Image 1 (tube, rainbow, N blue to C red):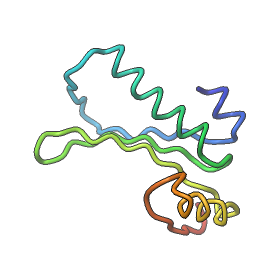
Image 2: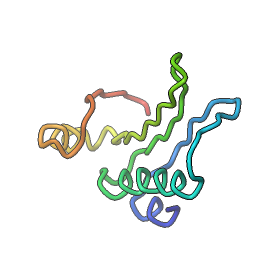
Image 3: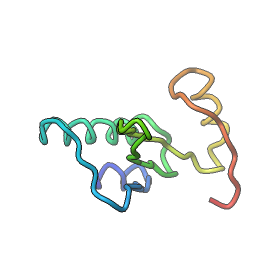
Image 4: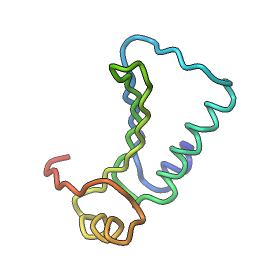
Length: 98
């Protein structure tokens, strides 16, 4: 994935909790799940920017996995078009200086 990230000029940021989290499941299947999510974000997101992968634990004990793409400000139009065309979901926020 590092080669694809470099080719797409995308930085991958991993945001994990400080303490280890136990996840029930097959190790190989879980690895493939994360690889697929990150690879799709790299392939189908705009070049440039950042893919952010985060794992949090809800108060219910459930795990929440989030993979998001931040478009560079120069690609704000592309971000809006992708959102309007439903090629991505979420919200559009312009954050200067990032």
